[in-house]
Length: 128
Image (cartoon, rainbow, N blue to C red; front, side, top):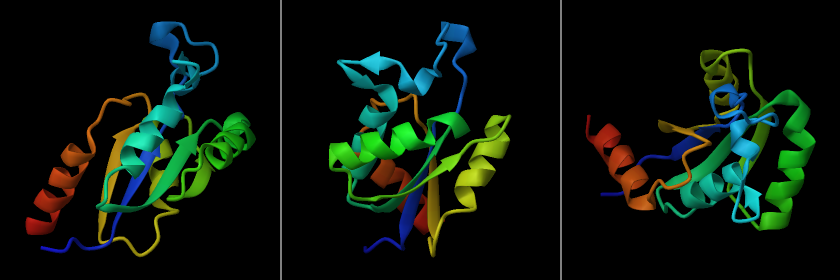
């Protein structure tokens, strides 16, 4: 079964106060690179995901754009500023989704998601 157009909003605008991350938890380095970059790679590795919208703190947009450009990621279509709450950040990401019939929302600080899990969720949504 071919899936309908699927896009993913990766929400990475959190402050990371609980872990003491002064620069936001999604930008904490993991193996020499920001956590969010690992997450974006995992999402892009899912064949079902046609486009990605990354939501980051407003003051990190230029940095995120540069990281994404240097990383070779091809499906990140937009980088947008998050809001004061997770709900507002998700809404900002959803506002930039384009023509998707299925939208997945994933936490940018969760880089260990397997592409197969994302595809299974998209398939379940398509079947619903």
